[in-house]
Each structure stands twice: as structure tokens, then as C-alpha cells.
Figure 1: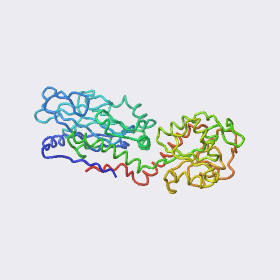
Figure 2: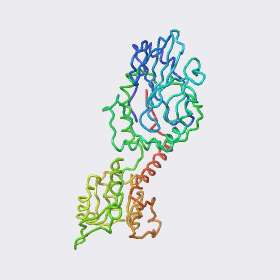
Figure 3: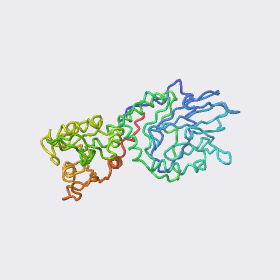
Figure 4: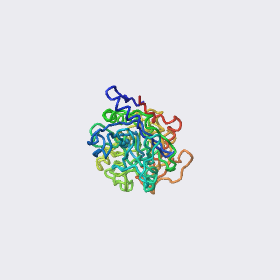
Length: 425
């Protein structure tokens, strides 16, 4: 579980805390919004000065004696971990609301509509949150021009970012390539089409309201906790097993000596880009291939494959060819994965009777690369039917995403989305 915690208030801040709590705005969300705020950092201004949490100057307008800045924290934007949006309210000497502003895609604007009025409930500001992205509007017409962008962001482009690290937290948030990939998958698993029914009411005073300095100290701990939590708790593809011949290299180009050792071989188009993509996304890759150790050493040296592979399982070493389960078990053992994790491992190869049958019998996900003219194209029986078929190496990246999203959605549905428990006290 995520263990970082927040303390709500301290005696020395009680006056400002009560003021911020009393005037906490009311937010309205799209009824399908997957992510709601978890905490608010407040700053009270009694004179014009720079904001501590947003790149702007806070200037008190005429008749204004107090301004309150609400830095509102979400764990998730639909496109990145994390989200910090802002509301500013301006009060007169009697505590009446004079004006208000909201953050809006890196900038800010007035929260007044066409009639130049603020919407309030019991003298508290009302603001509407853009679906998924959470920019603020004072009237729904301010969000109308964002409908195409918002719909794209919440749907096709959900999860397009990974970890947002702004200037305040640079150096304090560290994310591995695996964690970045899992951020993308987690957000993508929450993709939705906004309903634009803003009936979901959210009282900002119902969540922890703390001084901004404390929220600022909490944020990097929170983000790092999420990153660790994702890598240990979120279902994902834990390894990719790759064959070599007609999967990475073109067997038709292999030059062999009299003993049958490969002296050189050319790559299938897209093979190197695939390996770079797997590495960039943080996948652990194992070679699981039939052949001679020295042949693979030559191929790996020729094309610089070594950095892309965590382990190598080669039939000459094992004393058996695929589909023998010993080939797959050896790769699992080298990667320190257990047999109950086979449903998180993907085998990719060109041979239905060896790669696909072996993967299916062992319980792995099977992906058949139907690229070369060699080998049978027709499964001999059900054990040779692949889970996925691809025509080019690069298509594997989309297949892996599809598998991972399925694993995540199934897990969240079964377990009631345990990763969304904020664990804030």
C-alpha cells in the first residue's frame, strides 16, 4: 500500500486553515471522471506577492483584502502522473467573494461567464473541471471549445505521457523505464469518452487541506510511492521471450561454415527498432532459440544485440529443442520468475510447431511472426494456434500493450481498483 501521509493542520496555521476550509470551492466533474482530487495545499495572501506554487504574481484587486490560493492535487491526469491545478479566490474585508481565477492548461483565466458573473453555492465558488485534464472553468461554455481536445485526450491519447516532473520537483522524483510504461498503461486502462454531464459534485473541503509547503514536501514522496507501487502491484508483462531465426534475423541471409555455424546474417526489417522499443519501454527480454551457442554469439556480436537481452536460453546448452518445456523453464529461472507467472510472459517466434506449440503448452502468451516464406503456415492442431499473429516485428509493441491493458483491466475489475486507494490521513 502507499504509505506517505499528510498532516492536516497545526496550531500556528489554524487561522489560515479555518479561512481556507471555510471558503473551499465546490467542484463539478463529468459523471464519468475516473480521477478525483486527494488533497489541497493552500496559501493565504494579504498583500500582492509571487505565488509559491504557480508561475504568476498574485495581485490583490481593488477592495480585496485577502486572496486564497488552492493548489489542488490529483494522483492522476488522464495523460500523466501527477496533476496539480489551481484556484484563486479574492475576498473583501467582510469575507465576501469578489473574484476568482482558475488554472487552464499551464496558464490561468477569470472564472466569469458571458454575463460576467461567478457561480456560487452558499457564497462558495463553483468551478467546473475539464474531463480527464482538470483545467478549471467558471461556466460550462468556457469548456465548449475544448470538447474535441478533451475527447481525444481522454480516449485515443489517454496515457500518452508518463510522469510529469516540473521544475519544483526535478531531482526528487525518479522513474524507471518500466515504471513509466506502467504509468501509461494505468492511465490508458481508464480511458473514457466524456459525457459532458457535470453532475458529479465534489466539496473541496471534504479532503485534506494543508499549507502549501507541506503539500510540496509530500508530492515527491507520493509520486515515488506510486511508482514503486505500480511496479510491484500492477499486472504487466514481466518478460518477452524472442526466437532469433526469421524472428530477428533473416534465415535466407545466413552464411554458415562447413560445421553449420552461422558466420553472418542480416536482420529482418524492423528487428533492431523492435529491440530498441522493447528496451525503451522497460521490457525484460530473453533469447529462447534453437541452435548453436557460437552461432548466436556471432550474430549478437555482428548486430550489437547483447545489451538488449537480459538472459539467453539456447538449445545446445539445454540439450533440448523447443517445444521442450525445459527451454522455457530455463529462461524463467534465469530471470528469477516462477512458474505461476507464466501468464505474464510472452513468447514470440516464427515456428508454429516449436515456438507457438511450446509457448501454449507451457502457459505463455504466444505470438507468431508470419514473415518468412519458410515453415508451415497452417497449425497442425489447437496447440499450434497462436494467441496473436503479426506480420512485422514492430507490431509486437502494440500486441504487448493490448495484453497488458487486458491484464490490468481484469485485475482492477476483480479487485475493486485497489491501486486507487489514496491512503491519506
